[in-house]
Image (tube, rainbow, N blue to C red; front, side, top):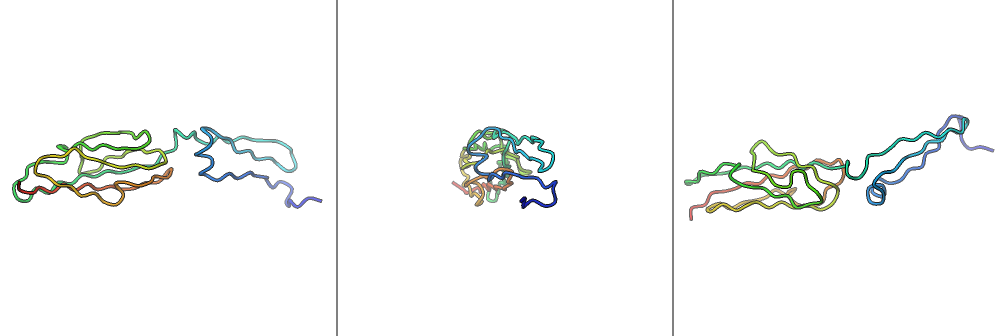
Length: 142
């Protein structure tokens, strides 16, 4: 006696996304037709192709005499193989690809400037997620 109705219902094996990403660089999901006894394969992307995106925006406040612009600050990404890992600041934002895991951001200090980081400038990245990090550099008279 079969519990599958209608007869062409597919039997699928579901594996959680986290298990897939943590245990296999490449994995296939199999679907088997209940009546035709055929197997088809659909490949998932390898772990090296799955990434989240961090958009890093750099703002500079020059009140009180500062003259720096965002590109005067070098931003460094500390994570699992970020692309790019280091770049000049940009007020329009720079897209960084991050693999799943923890990340943080640092910036090369410029004399006379202090910085603040928004909440998403460090933390954990899940696959195919997008986060925004804003770095604000404030000029302070020495």
